[in-house]
Image (cartoon, rainbow over all chains, first blue to last red; front, side, top):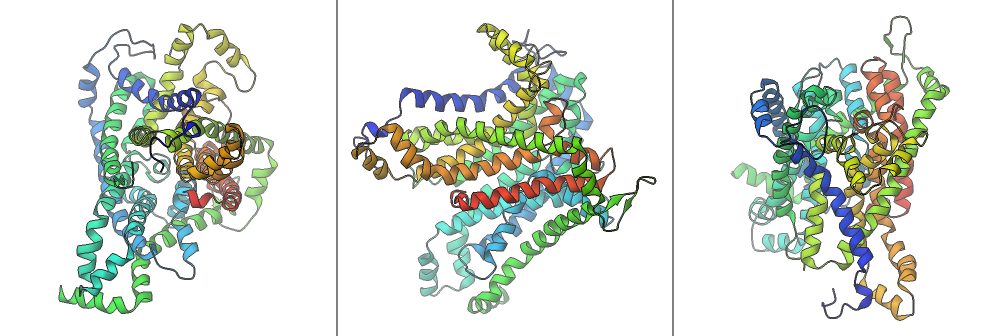
Length: 271
Length: 304
């Protein structure tokens, strides 16, 4: 990259370009902040803006609701199990595919893109069709299977990107210095991919926690938090409580995502 | 531990075996559960429902596909969904380009980091919450109409809502509103690959173009844009595919017309016609396969 002084006129944004860029960013952010505002509104019938007054009472009301707690617990349990499966299988796949060349590799790579390349509804209805044909009753484990399938891809993508950044010479050096395969893995590779694993795991967790498109097909009578939320959208009488849950969900998913971002940011290549 | 070490040493010498051992569990999962399910889906679409007993008859038939393609209402649904996906993709590209261009080519390192977080945070914010937030924003007395009112633009909104087909009683129940929400939801998926592609445009090329007398517009058209095309294609895969398969947004924010996703969800659920739902869901798969083949030609996979 040229130094700052070398950046001539061809390398400077015009005012119009700047405005368009910041306007795009603002467009992405405003709706999310609206939710935070509405969680405190005193108006419980319409979406009146600006809110006539602010209150904390809806948090108290939501906190006392057993159905919300049950849905939250189910979502956390599903996300934990799906993430664990994804971490194991996604990492294995990343190690196998990172640097190897073999026949049929392209096809396998395609298979590892498919669950996120095809729309979620396809995954959902396909799993449902398979469960129906196999006589499997939908429930906790069918939700987990659906989530783990796309979470594997997320973990795989994270780990493989990191593995490809590790110079092969490091592994060779380790082996040349007398370390066996296991030692090389533990002392050379594992420390390098640890943050990628953590980041992939947290993204997978957040994605699973928030998933609705596949889940509506695979959940049967179970209600995860997103399903609870979705049903609530068609029952507008409880609007203030929905607002509170929305804020809670945003906060729960935001923390792992911010951490994942910090962990994967390549701080040495930037700037 | 010694056993594990011996195993590691054994495997080190046998690379093919080691690879197979690593690959087997994830491959079994995706191969059996995921691909298996896709085949189950395909199989279901070749079954049909018995009209009298409302039961699925597990025999090969093309009746369900015939039903899908012979009813004008179904064709309308497919066309409507594809039109929305194309419109959303085009709009997302137009809005995403300045953002990606600025963050990739002009921003200082600090600003660039800010933009990356700024794009990723909303992208990872809960999907349902964002849809819900838009319902609040677009509602009749909501923030959007308040905003327009402040600037005296209410007649513009009323005019847009009075437009046949795309209009409706309020933004929250019109195709315009649905379009805005779709664009909003998938915008980060367009910005990120586009920015990645633009970041790889060598500054020297842009400089050379300028040195050779090209005006900024010409440089953009003949140098930057062709190099950004793979990123644009990659982003459009997401916006196109995500719009084709979504059924939450059209049912939460939207007009009365059905979309493919809603049909799939409704047919398998309340209507109990899994074969028709399966046949409907094959439509986006085929459309995306065609799209992927085109995007691959444009080098989209290098920019992912």
